[in-house]
Amino acid sequence: MTDNTYLAIAMVVYLLGMIAIGFSAYRKNDTFDDYMLAGRGLGPMVAALSAGASDMSGWLLMGLPGAIYAAGLVNLWIAVGLTVGAWVNWKVVAPRLRAVSEETNNSITIPTFLSNRVGDKHHVIRIASGIVILVFFTFYVSSGMVAGGVFFESFSGVDYRLGMVIVAAITVAYTGIGGFLAVSWTDFVQGLMMVTALVMVPVVGIYELGGVGEVIDAINQVDPKLLSLTGGATIIGVLSSLAWGLGYFGQPHILVRFMALRSAGEAKRGRRIGIGWMLLAVIGATLTALVGIAMYTAKGQPLENGETVFIALSQLLFHPLIAGFLLAAILAAIMSTISSQLLVTSSALVEDIYHAVAKKPLGDWAGVLWGRGAVLATAVVAAILAWSPSDTILQLVAFAWAGFGASFGPTIILALYWKKLESRGAVAGLVAGALVVILWKNLSGGIFDLYEILPGFAANMLVTYLVSSFLPGRSGAEAKAE
Image (cartoon, rainbow, N blue to C red):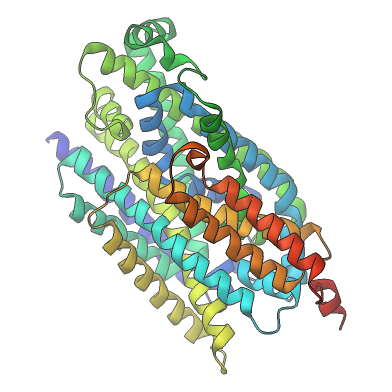
């Protein structure tokens, strides 16, 4: 058999496995709550790996290795910020959000939780949150589809757009069929695949090159600054990279995993599992990039696209069948995030926007059908945006990550820990954070080179505090007491 045949076999086995999981979960979706939150029955292992897999996406196996391959360890500050942010998110937000979201009328989405928490009878925050989710998740899903297209084009020569459509179609299929439970189970499998691949590739690569010392020597021959955390770094650059960690507090597709835990007490075990997985994955991605520099750039054969370094090494170092399953880990990373984001976007359309404006609520079965339709509609719009991409995967992810972190992050933290949070303050802060991110993104030079999540996060926090403190109104606690 040819190499491409082996690769195709591995890909087909993986894709069929994902669809099988979707059908397995289909029978357990009796209600809309089941479809969107799996009845709050996730164990810590599944929740942790599902949160990690849906978080990291193609960024972990393509974006981060590509950034380090191009500029060296100076880009590792992003990973440092993310790891710290993820730990704090599990420690501070996860247990409290699990408990409070159930106490506030069994909220099953982030916008519904915020609305119930601040006593917003007019559903303004649900609608505003739903719109923010639609805007930024459409870009986020689009980044995943771009990654899928680039992946297929890089390893098999398949047309970019055909590869993008394949990824989108399979992901929409199992997400629409199995809902949150299917997404969580597939994320669990995909998380295991991702971390296994990110350990195997650099370990074998280092062995083939003769050891760690030889890898370091080869990189030093290219440019010693590549091994420096500060080489070529600026204060704004380092702050921007570390600021990625702030994004965790506002990512709906991650926060919803906390809400789905069996109990608040299981967040502690989930944190240990999740951060352990993340450390292995980030270290593996970093070493993959360094091995790639030693294997290609140092030998005068640099890769045309640094974001394909994991793909290139997998095909170079392993038998085609094994390489096929390693490359399937990239698909796993991409699809795990797309599926989670599609489901959250679907919930925003059906649970938050529709239910906030409709006079007649949907029944369970109708809600599931509308949810599946929303998954498909969002995927189509994202595919249109990804058809002719103008930004890199990392740039697309960065914009969406900042949008969610700045719009939802401060609002979530204040909703969980500040009793005086008022509905108009929450809405004003959320909108302010989103607008500042959008405006800051389109400016450049000087202070405007700072990652937009920082000014957006600060604007949200300040506006929320000022409006809640100084405009007459009721806090969520007072509204609930009435």
